[in-house]
Image (cartoon, rainbow, N blue to C red):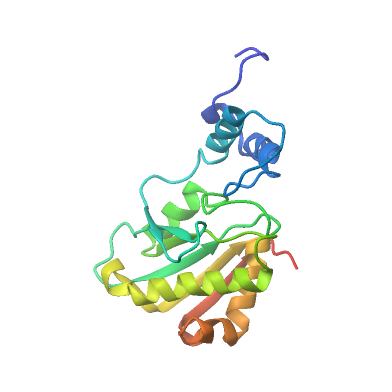
Length: 200
């Protein structure tokens, strides 16, 4: 490969992928932008950023807003209802999607251990506040609980996991029962909070 050629995602190191991702972090996925950047380039960069998103998974709408969707990966084998990891991406509360920072190894590793893995999309600042983001994540948990029978997940074994600002969001949800109460579930079903590189 010459220096003039654009590398394909599989040729890039994780560090290079992360660096390329910085080129689009100022853009919103869910509304028009006036940024002076070629949209074909944006889509190419997003493809590179998401090159390690694990295969499979089912997209599910959990609320009425455009951003309120999640992707659920089922465990490799689960004769009983599976515990579920609810994952919240980072991005300084202002950027990112549910396909960011999941990592194929993270999902497949947890699926192989018998966990379902749900990566949650949510509305970004400035459209809503951090408290409202926490409530959206609580609403996604409520959706998973309500549909646990169909999804074959255990509604009383939910673990929250978040990265960076997502770690902040899940920590608020896991320690303040008012969000769970507003979403009509008991905070006791949350069996753990995993905060990865948390922001505050």
